[in-house]
Image (tube, rainbow, N blue to C red; front, side, top):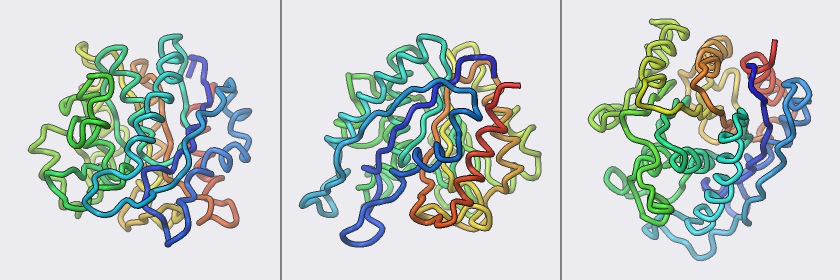
Length: 299
């Protein structure tokens, strides 16, 4: 990684449902927990500061009202996009520490302002819930890929009149479980996906390399990597809000991630969903920090 790495905090939890009544999702502590692992120094990164999110308060929201915190998420998306856009235009490589998966909208909007970019989604689920396939729309952290590709309410899908932020043909999804029932819709929508079993069968380096033929296409100006910690199996990463069996193991994710971010066309990365409240001894924070350092650190 020869470009200037910039570590930027985006500690928003606006896109998740409360873990229990009266509590707030703990993923807003992700950035602090990884920084406690000396991530800035270990990466040799420059300090990018923090984009402070609005308060978590769903008010009188109820099922059927659409995405909760929509106005706050829209405002935060623009604010985060401003920062990411500036770094990408300057030739930096931003490493954005979330937060829940709704922060992906900030990078997608930023890159849409600049040109046409793809996205490599490394996630245990595709986060493709939208009004056309579910009556449980509400949590943007489970809907951000649908929103980024233009599915859902206009106050989130059409910011600045730039809908869609990412074209379906420019998306590559990795790490969904072999039993994912929504994969057929991804395929029908033109979104390429590779399950955990397929990654193992092909090998993570080969799976990523095949996807790079699309992500490095001349039609694209580059691509972004969205990493959701729940792509890992709960045996190694239990500190997430929805731990599903059958995920990637640490070495598999490292090879996949290193291959993708090693591309000269990759322009940045965000990390989401790890919840320090579910990691009392800090072992999951250490594992995640080690993964990022191994994938990104300068030689």
